[in-house]
Amino acid sequence: MMNKPGREELISARRQSRSLYWAVAIFSFFANMLMLTGPLYMLQVYDRVLGSRSEETLVALSLLVVFLYGTMGILDYSRGRIMARVGARFQATLDRRVFDAVVRRSALGPDAKAQTGLADLESVQRLISSPVLMAFFDMPWTPIFLAGITLFHPWLGMLAVAGGVLLVVITLINQLMSRKPLLQANAFTHQSMILSDEIRNEAELVQSMGMREAAFGRWKDGRDTSLHETIRANDIGGTFTSLTKTLRLLLQSAMLGLGAYLVLLNQITPGAMIAASILLGRALAPIELVIGQWALVQRASKGWSNLAELLERVPPEPNRMGLPIPKAKLDIQALTVVPPGDTRAALKALTFAIKPGQAVGVIGTSGSGKSTLARALTGVWRPAGGSIRLDNASLDQYAPSVLGQHIGYLPQRVQLFGGTIAQNIARLSNSPDSEKVVAAAKKAAAHEMIVNLPNGYDTQVAVSGGKLSGGQMQRIGLARAMYDDPVIVILDEPNSNLDNVGSMALNQAIRALKEDGRSILIMAHRPAAIQECDTLLVLDNGTCTAFGPKDKVLREMVSNHQEIQKNPAAGGVQ
Image 1: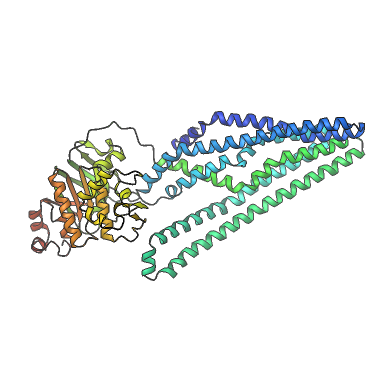
Image 2 (image 1 turned 90 degrees about the vertical axis):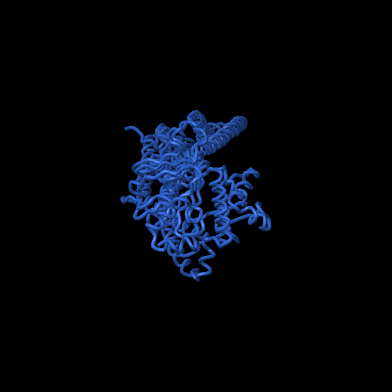
């Protein structure tokens, strides 16, 4: 059966460390061979040293045992370090791929696999680096050790095999009984973490609206469920861990008891009795370790499945040939867009074109498709039909990072990231280009506002904006859209949080862009936002009802057009 693409990517990343896995297997071979040191030492001491009462033999055997155990310790230490690096290489190989898949999938809307993608990758890495995986390298030696016990006496071998089979059965029962509680515990823990992040990010709203008790109640409900499922999973796992430990100790004592009986019957020697007990403990140790860490194994197994599904649903970005900087021309033909997870088109057969230096206002009632058009033009949502061309090239001919340089975007809700204002304008660059940052801020008419802040461009901002007002955040977001000197600028409700000074600065920025030959699309509900527009596109239920010169469209389509032309700061478009 052929592997699916997502699973094949994971296997390919794991295959990069094939030589290291072989090294660990070789080290495990010699380490397990050296595990026979203890049983053989006890066999010689009881059967030869005590019988001959030779101190020289005892000293020689003891020195040899110290050397062999030291060698075994070095081998065990070395394979642990190798597996830690194998896990790190696996994660480093997939970090970029999984990160891109998470971002691309999350941009389409909430997705459980995307939300846990990076955590799933880390869970697989933790398993690879843990002693549990090395226990799987040791398990093939369990039948060999059991066969060694059988060489001492068939009855001892039968007892050892019965004990091993019983432990394997316990492992399978543990897997069946703990799988569901562990998955539920992880799911509820993740949900409570998401809710706590949402509450923390909106702490100002929660505090000001008196929502703290209600928010705590919702968080506590999820947290209590998570704790309940975690305790349930831990109880099941702890039960099987204790049962396994007790059974292993009982089996070792039973091995000693049966061995003593066989010694009394003169069928084995006392040394063989002790050696068999030690071998049994070593044979069952890997199984006991796996049972004790079964939660880690199951979490990694679930993470592997989630990653495989995520990578399959979000294939790698194809390599694209670089194109010259495009002209500010957009050509939209029969564009149809279906929002992710929906079955109904939000935009239907939309056709229009924009020339360099043109400012187009996109107006319409809420839900008419304005924001959908913005997401489609920025490449976030792919067309279900029709085409979008930037200077005659379809958007998918540009790599996403390159397209973002050509098309600046100010979303309806501006979100800043932790860091300085300069880093936010420079699109999270750790070393912003000062000249480009200042130039972008000046184009957005935000330079004066920023330098008047206590630390200017070095002002630290929080994820929610911190002490910045909504208008300040919007103007910084506009400067971010201007960074990299885009040829197309898309503004979604750009003045929703702006005062009169901010609106004037916005209009100044739009005029400067037009003079520079850039094209601007403004999704607007407030008339002041379309003051500098020379063309209007009217949307109604996802279809174009008018496209043409602003004055003409306003006269034909908008009931309060005279009020808007006299007073752009008037109410919404009607």
